[in-house]
Structure formats: C-alpha cells, structure tokens
Amino acid sequence: MRICLVAEGSYPSVTGGVSSWIQSLITNMPEHEFIIYAIGANQEERGNFKYKLPPNVVHVHEVFLDAYQSEEANWGKNYRLTASEKVAIQNLLDNNNPNWDDIFSLFSGDKLDSVSNFLTSKDFLDCIKQVCEEYHTQIPFNEFFWTVRSMLLPLFLLMREEIPEADVYHSVSTGYAGVIASFGKWKYNKPLLLTEHGIYTREREEEIIKSDWVKGHFKNLWTEYFYKLSHCTYHFSDQVISLFNKNKEIQVEIGCAEEKITIIPNGINPSDFENLAPKVEEDQEFINIGAIVRIVPIKDIVTMLQSFAIVKQEVKNARFFIFGPTEEDPEYYEECVQLVESLGINDVIFTGAVNIKEYVGKMDLLVLSSISEGQPLAVLEGLASKKPFVCTDVGSCSELLYGRNDGIGNAGIIVPVMNYVQMAKAIVTISKDETLRNEMGMNGFERVSRFYSRDHFINSYKEIYQKVEGSYGRDWVSIKENR
Image (cartoon, rainbow, N blue to C red; front, top):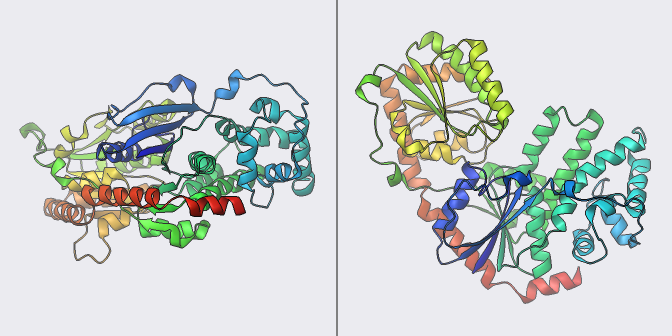
C-alpha cells in the first residue's frame, strides 16, 4: 500500500512530538510505502531534513507558503467564473460553508493560469467586493482586500500544486494539510484519514487572539476561516483519529461527526528507556530539573523560566536543563536568554537538540509548560524513564499524570496554564521529597507500560489502513457522483 502523509510545519524538517510520531509510524510499517507531502513556511528550508528518512519513504514532496514571491501578477484578468464558483469563493469569507467540490474543481482544472493573476483578477475583486459590502461595511475596502488576499493566498497556492497519487491519504492535522489531503481524496477517489494530535483550530484561534499582526476587526474573520478549513477535513475524512477522549469531545463540538472518530493514544516502547545513565557522583548534591521541549512560544518557556526563579529561592541546589532545538524561532530563543539574565537566575542550561536518552536518566523531575498540546510524546518518554512531571493542564497531560480511574497513583502534578507561581510550588514540592519523586516515577512507568504501548499504537493503524483501503470503491464513487 502507498500512503501519502500530509504534514504542515513538522516532519521531516522540524523536530518535535508530531514529527517523532510520524517517524515511528513509518519505521514500524516497513510493509507499506510512504509519500511525505511536507508543507513548510520558507523555501530556504528545502531539503533541510532533521530526520533520517526510513527506506520505505519513496518520495518527499515539499511545498512552501512563500512561493508566491516568485510569481508576478497581471491585474484585471477575467476568468469568467461560474456562479457556483463565485459563491464558493465568497463562502470562504462570509457566514456560509463553502462547497469544496466547486473549489477543488476550479483549482484542479486549466481555467486558472496562476494564483497571483487570479487574486488580482476582476472575478476575485467582484467576489471580495460583494462580501465586504454585505458583511463588513465598517471596514475600508482597500484594507479588506489586502487582508483577504493574504489570507487566501497560501491555500490557493497549495491547491495549485500537484498532489502525488496514493492508495490512502493521511493528514496529521486539519488546516492547510487537511484541505490538501481532502483534495487528494477528491481528485483520486481514495480514502482519507485524519489524525488530530492537538485541535488545530483552537490553537490558531489562541494565536490570533494574542497576535499583534491581526487587527481587532479581522480576528473573527481569520478564526472563522480556519474553522472552515477544519470543517472541510472533517467532512471528507473517512476516519478521524483522536488521541484521547477530551479531544474527541472538542472535535464533535466543532463539527466532526462522532461516528467517524476513533481514539488511538500515542505509544512508546518503555524498554527503550531502560538502563539510562544516572547522575554521576559529583552531581548528587544537585536537584536536576529538565524540560524536553522546542524553544517556541506555544511551549511557553517564559513561564517555565519565571517559575524557576521562584524555585531557586527555596531549592538553592536546583539546576534547570532545557533540552531542545533553539533555531526554530531565534527571536523567541533570544527573548528567553535575555529573561534568564534579567531574572538573575543561575544554573539554566539550554542544551540545544540532544539525544534525550543520554540526559533524562540524570534528571530528578521534568517540566512541561505548554499553552496547548495533544498527547505529548515528551511526557510519555519521561514517564517511561520513571521521572515525575509537573505539567500544565493541556491536552491529555492530566490523564497521563493522574490516570482515568486506573488504580495507579499520580505521576506528577498538574498546574494551570501560564501560572508560574503554581508551577514553582509544584516543582518545589517534588524537589524536596525524594520518596515522592520515586513513587511518582514508578506510577508513571506503570501507566505508560500498561496503557500506552507502541505495539497497540502501530497495530491499530495497520488495521485502519487495511480497513479503509480494502472497503473503498463503488460506494465513494457513487457518493461523489450524486453530490
């Protein structure tokens, strides 16, 4: 079977939980071939892979959202859009859901010569003008036009890219990746799977609310646009996989049909974390606190550092190791370095990207301060290493540390998002009690071993791939013909 995995801003050019998940999935299914459809931000990233690709990856198709810079526009062209095509474009921006069949048909044919020309065409101008006059009379048209153009440009560029043919399309998020996977299903009459690690729309909504680059009256427009992209993926998906029940409930609330959703948690092999190197003798006097994390805003390193400033007041021998790449967002990394200096805290070590197995055995406890998560592999790996955790209350972290009435004790402490005082209090509690640390570490190891095995994770996906590929054909064709 040939499977096209569609990933946005992750594998194989960015490290992290989703990328590690993809690498594990491919590596453990040598009987299948994989095509990677990788959506990146900047063309300068081309070919800069952070993972050694398994031999069953037969092709990597890279596309970049800044590709428009190489296109020149001829203003005022007339493409003679049909009435249904115009309505579909308008519905991306008004209060209605678009007909994605009309959009996919428009962008798969020969009618459009380039995205830049289309976005400066008379047809597009007429569509935008009508939406502005009907729904956004308080906004100057010039301002509305350029905002909408920047909003739709990445999506339209991606839909003009060639989509590799495969037996199954599998997107690891909604958003742009989900729409492209839906387009692949529409074009080749093949099944589509969606695995949603976090809730893409909620994450984009949080970013937009906090952003400075989106003005107040455009925040709702951007947010609703991303919800429409998710609705597209939910609609076209044959099966939607959620990692835990809380996310399933959110997916249903957003608009995914409940009968499509299956829960498959992430999985690891606890034996991979046996015989880890412990503290050396000269380090026994220290309390080592670690964070396995990318240095990016959504991981909220700032709160982590602020909490450590309080911890150092009570645990003088504490050291804080932050394990993870620093180059993904250089400005944010520099902000974190400056914060360490301004807080006057010693013993903060940014290690950069490392082999975590060489370090995690030397930690006394681990910390995760994310604003948003799905089911973080970093927590699963830390628990498999028998280390207690302090985590923010995001994604499935509460379920991982406290369980779901499984008879196993707590594996750490959950604290509110962005509350560095509560985080510091939890870290101090665990740091000062070696017996508690050991007990929580063993609880976490037992929970991961019992409920989050790699074998269950891989076998579940093997079954789903076979099921959707084997049952596909006449039913879907007839559905498409009747739509």
